[in-house]
Image (cartoon, rainbow, N blue to C red; front, side):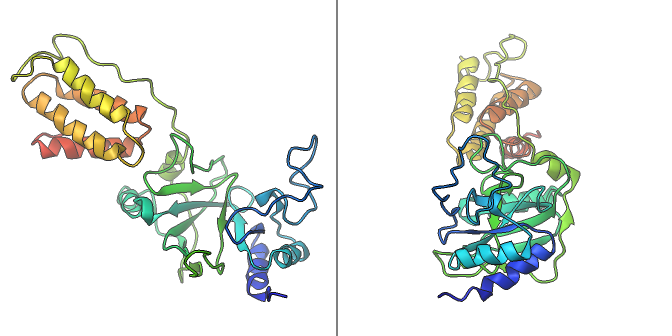
Length: 298
């Protein structure tokens, strides 16, 4: 019989601070529901279900006896926290393999991620823990228009994260808390950034001859502008910010020859970036960078 003490003791410690915990399978996925407890049963209350492993994070508990039983039932699995309002936590999940470090550094520079308690994950990522603000904060992973940038997701209401001292199934490395760190409040700007973004309508190209015109050897500026904007709007995830930067350089060259005004150029690029579900912060940074590379302020 596997020794469960390595996870029971920390699980009870987390439960003691009011954090509802549960067990995932070794694969970090929820344990399958039992045949007698289907999630789609009419009138079935997942929150009140007595089963120890059913419904993923709905099985999470702070009751010591139930927590002990949950861990004992899945002794080789991963200890996990139900994030969001039930535990009073919002976790910012930083994945370096998908650009998370660069995004995190940009968020820190913008004042959105103040120092707080964090976990170094078994795969080398980071889980930054903040206090839940008391208003709905949705999870962002896999949802268009949400998230904080490439490689940075939000785990809050309706989500979960793996807790130390669980061991990552692929690397064999344990999750571990950084020492001497207290969990902090979410700054208002971070709360706002975690809200879903309403997709903007497709960009409207300026057609007035006073704002877009043939100049500097550009015979069809409207088509050239449309090509730049279409490239941004249709860019694949992971290439969107780079594509917007390149488009900003191209449009900046149009501004320099007076084919389009600076304000109209920035407005059109911003609309295209929003259509591609980029954050306003990333859009501003890409436009500033592209304009500066062409010797223009943005």
